[in-house]
Image (cartoon, rainbow, N blue to C red; front, side, top):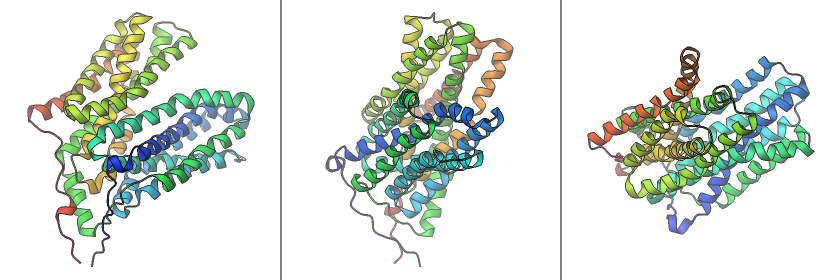
Length: 414
């Protein structure tokens, strides 16, 4: 006999205010800090421990694997168990403990173990956070997910600057201990202060039915996965090859390269909130089509832009368009399936991104070896152009994100 628990009253956005949203944005900042801090501090640790390049590469690979392996399982667990706030706080706890325990690592294998611990927290994070926001701010879903993205992007900007400053006065161990405080504090703060709805615990029959109809057999979800993968492939390859293009093709110094990258990242850090807000009012698919088309055109044109104002302006427009797309994609996907599988949807999207995005830098590299960096960089625009084709297909068929029937519509057996 299946057991269920009743759904608690969901806090209305006006009642919940923006406290939960602000807390979620801060937790996303902590999650992005982990990746950014490790990236900056790893060369210092490698020098102190005398690690080989192969050992460093293995650490990075294990970190990436740990960050991706829990996306789908943790999303499914959140939908089945329903305690998403507890799971999100656990993810932050793992990130904080990863920082802390790494600072006490006495050797390579201990370092790898504790780095993996933090990476597991990173992998658990997104399905919980994004499904919580999607349910709590249903009428402002795009804005909420966009503001959450802005918090994470702020962490990416903050991590290298703050870590570099800390390393000028502290050892790498001391720096990691300082960074451990923030995610540990946010784990407690979110659990204690965030107002979220508790997800219904579903019967086994409902879980299987909703997963099959809401995920596996849902054409809209498949299209959104393809869209998300193509967007991520474009971003991954472009961020990897822009520094190479600026250095080798335009012969810029490292300081100027850093400046142009900062322009791109800063533009991308603020745009998700605005894009989500606009999509709440104008519709998801038109915003996606416009953003993808602008992204493709900017990438195609970038090699023709001279250094200076033209290149800087092009990177600003590209950063705004490319980074604005993710919250709109996730909002569209989560409106295309029953809310009971929202966390699983997030896990599916992130797993798809992880499973395919590694291909785009390889493709760009092969093209660069054969045809040069300019054509290699411009070719990355094919990915958002293909994604725009997916959106156009939806629009031509007159499709919009239409929520499927949820488990609430079907009475449960006692």
